[in-house]
Image (cartoon, rainbow, N blue to C red; front, top):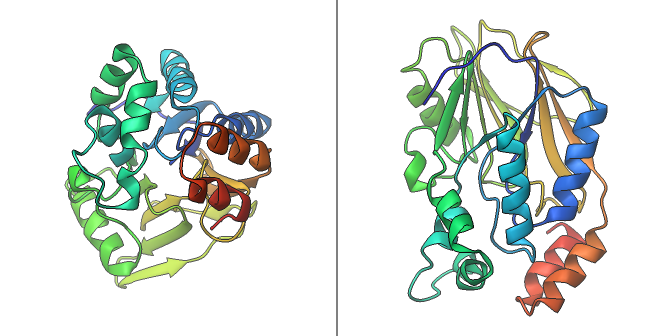
Length: 257
């Protein structure tokens, strides 16, 4: 897990779920925000109809300096379960078959975490990255922040996995607080506190709004902005149906639930 030079503006994109249209819309929006770095926080594939194209886009971004992490659906696509026990397993075998050996090897080789200056990136929780624990309340956020504290310089933990946008922070003399951000409104993240953000899902929002989610961290101003980005989600849903994948995943893109 390497440490690199100081960031400027970092686009944080997670849970793309083989939705190329949503990814391209977020990348275009990020370019309009003056982004200088990109981080893909896992779950490149799963659920959606274009896993190969999304993996190739991730490889292209990585070749130009982006940081790319592995998520649980990436691991499932490399080694699908023998039987489907939960909804997350239902597209793993199909995704595996759509990827060529090089793409599967790429997913298998992705790291679970990445650290750069004050920032720690992880798909799920920093306390046990390979166990894919959900950071969905103050207690689970505290566990992740406690684990990140082994790196004294880390003040900002960014992840995905839960498909919702949320921010948690801890002061010197207070417990963990939860903050629900508003899209497009900068949130100061001063270094005297510890911060954890879940940046939402690019390719499969679940809050009743079908617009794609991502966030931008300005490392110079110490600000985080959560964004919602419109894209052609009906076309992404049609692609899922054409691929013969469960209709539930197409319905979810159309409703954002």
